[in-house]
Image (cartoon, rainbow, N blue to C red; front, side, top):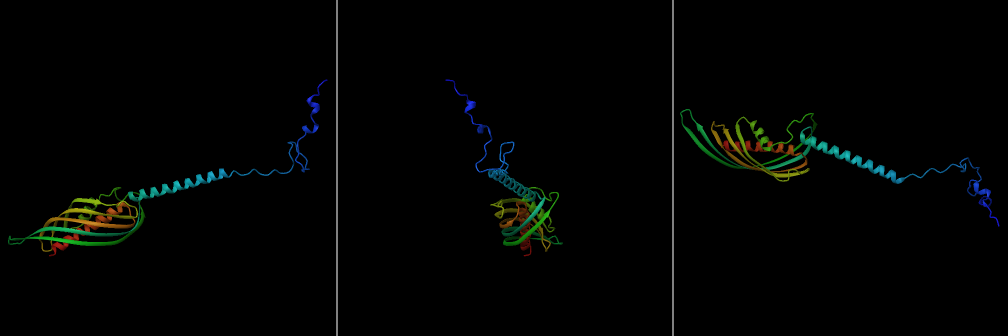
Length: 236
């Protein structure tokens, strides 16, 4: 018995585009309904990835600006500080004085003094320089010497300086500085005093203060302490 071909078993409706049940709108050439199709759903994962990338980029930019500002402050291009400086100094001064008279006679004296000084000062500043006003790294020994060189009556040579403690902390700096200074002083009685001073300064700084600004402030304070100690000895 001859078989029936597949073409005869296929219904004519199988070749027509299918239309959803209940949809009476005519079909277009693509075989879809003429009704507007819903928009594609947004990919929330892609949007979240873009937002995270933008946030990370913003954080990196802020971190870079902070690093540049810190380096600029330490290098002297930008200076900004707001801090409280507290220091307590103890000195031991030994001076030998010689006074000459027109008659050729002279007298010799030896003065030994132990003194204690306290400093409390607030300091603030804000500014910008195109070029660094001071070297990148401030040497404390040179800073003390430069401040002492401004004194006309006292000739001093800083021999030793030892700085210790966590003075590199960003907001709270503390430590101690030991120093030894060789002195030559002309007293008010025209006597010439020579000797040595040993001292130690304990300091505490709270606030925004760079290491270079700390050394500048500490150097000025130690030089002032040396002059005060010398005056207390030579006035006797």
